[in-house]
Image 1 (spheres, rainbow, N blue to C red):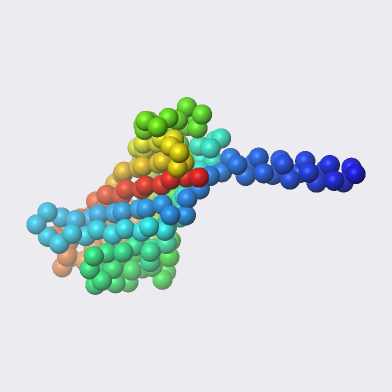
Image 2 (cartoon, helix red, strand yellow):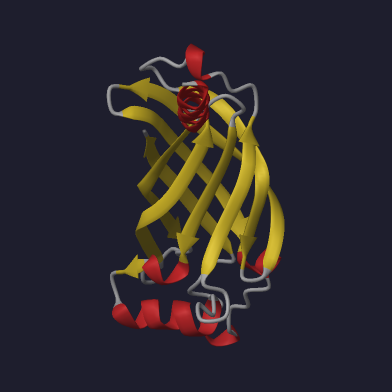
Length: 179
């Protein structure tokens, strides 16, 4: 009998701890490194994992580099082989914390937050401070963030032959519904 009670308590406590973490395996990251007057350099990855600890505001995200899709197949090939070197650096990882996050204060109206963390990409780690809009809906917690990084900060070199066609400044957008 005592064993049953102990097992039930352990089960319930592990369930309540698990409820603190919500996630999405279908978050979307879009990045753009386009330069005016040249072909669009833009890609989207629709299979990004984002995990949020709703109690602490800690957030983590994982994107597989080969998951990014471009309009032009040749761009995708160059991205994976020449720029990001996906075989050597297969993923991008972000770990951070949402400042002053309190899930209980979220409403359907998006509120502004700042996410501080570290982005690991191409073998380099860079400190990121990104604005985010977060809201609570029937679908879950919606998180949208737009920020920029420089390719050069991650030792991603843009060959001189295309330097005028590809921006060093990469604009990134993350959209996630966490459940």
